[in-house]
Amino acid sequence: MSTAENITGQRILVIGGSRDIGFAIAQEAARAGATVIIGARKAQKAQRASATIPGGLWTTIDITDEESIITALHDIGPIDHIIVMASAHHNVPVTELDHDKVAAAFETKVIGPLMLAKHTADVLPATGSITLFSGVAAWKPERDYSIMGISNGAVAFTARHLAHELAPIRVNAISPGITDSGSWDSMGAGKQAFMKEAAAGTLAGRVGINRDIVDTALWLLSAGFVTGETIHVEGGASLA
Ligand SMILES: NC(=O)c1ccc[n+]([C@@H]2O[C@H](COP(=O)([O-])OP(=O)(O)OC[C@H]3O[C@@H](n4cnc5c(N)ncnc54)[C@H](OP(=O)(O)O)[C@@H]3O)[C@@H](O)[C@H]2O)c1
Image (cartoon, rainbow, N blue to C red; front, side):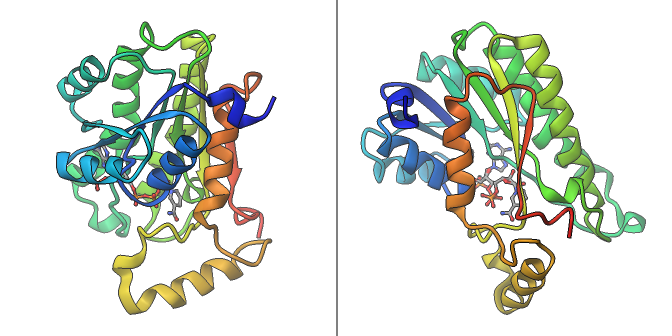
């Protein structure tokens, strides 16, 4: 059975689905026949993104706020799958760490998904799934990227432990390499050199594109024998 057949008619909440990789996943899931609910912190962003997706729905949700999770889940009704894109960056040398920004990174990547699991363990069907997002920085330490690396590493263990506790609901993580998703556009003129260097640091000789991650996310939705895993989609960056 193809992915499209498997997710037709299923309801998928994409938290952080209003832009970049999350939006690309939402678009493709809708194309495959799913009903997609875009979750974003700002109503306007969620509404605008969902309006471009056939049958798209939306909700406001901040994964670092337990009340917001409860309200969103109540408002949207039954769901089959949840994909969590949220991240909060604090890319500085360890000597310049800011306690609150470190906490925000872990609130977003680890504590938020745990609270989400708390409120969805009894809501998702036995065939349901949660997909979290880790990242290559976890497996390839780089100066200034320790918080990104450590918090993304913790995501892999979060998926593993939640998969065990929430079974048969499946919980997995995707670990992208540097992906030209749109999130790097704020680098401005420096982006091109950054991408070139990132591409050279892979075995594939290129950075990721949204399609690489979208394909993996859609496959995971119906990969019924895969749980507790972190799927590395990074062109061999951590081996290069
Ligand atoms: N792109 C890469 O090179 C790369 C590499 C490795 C790992 N990853 C991981 O892959 C995931 C997606 O990457 P991306 O490039 O698409 O990232 P992104 O552009 O940073 O997107 C993150 C999304 O999450 C939302 N978000 C942030 N904090 C949130 C919160 N507290 N509650 C709910 N939503 C929140 C953002 O919405 P707002 O508009 O509200 O900010 C945005 O829609 C991220 O987890 C990232 O860490 C990406």
